[in-house]
Length: 364
Image: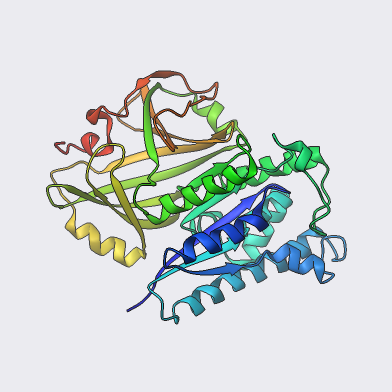
């Protein structure tokens, strides 16, 4: 039997706790029966070996070889994982490929992706989840240091700016979670483990998805925000059982898409959701199981980060006066701070008529 492989990214600004996080992840998920594999940070390896932006001909030259090596390493880890006699494998990437975007100009990023014949959607959404640890320079300044990593050279201000750039690079990923410094460091690590557990579907650790009806947003304003990313989504509902829901979707932009199947079991905000990636052929095959009595949902999603929160704003073609904003929180008591660009009408988390299934015409 082939192992179940999940690949995640641990990212974040300088001195955010990534090294310690790896030890916590190893201990927590080995005890849950996972084989845990770690893809080491490529920049640290390169710089430690004398290959750096300041030793290569240009930053563009450096980024080209770094991104190339990082993609190759991850592919080899996945190839090795598929041969292992294990039921569940967790591949943990110490920074993902898209982290490199934060260190490049838009022109250099376009050059590198063009040379390697890859695109931003597949680089970003090729991971099952991304966890951004906020730099200690934001909210825990007294613990910020450059002494424990020879590749770290940033000042506090530079660390904050880089943290913002890294988070912006990953904004748009469907499972991006931000772990800030609102608590002490040990609790920060426990929050990270809880978020990863929720991603893996461990019972009792599910996130709560909260939905808000909002006024139709200023699209030009959203698209002008550096922390906002536009995503095109098509969801098709399939025939399913009485207490479950199945749908397939395509997600991406500019002709570059990923495909997935989602199965929802149970009801309410704590319903269990299982998602798996599909090839394009698998997606097209499952479309043959579409429930033709339901409307296909097409929407434009604007993903944005604000005060260490990740918002998803869904704009539907059949509404001109309203939209839906979603955010995932650990519980219903968490205070949600909305960006200025979002004008909330009311919380509709418990209103069935505003769920995607209801918008498709499904009786709930």
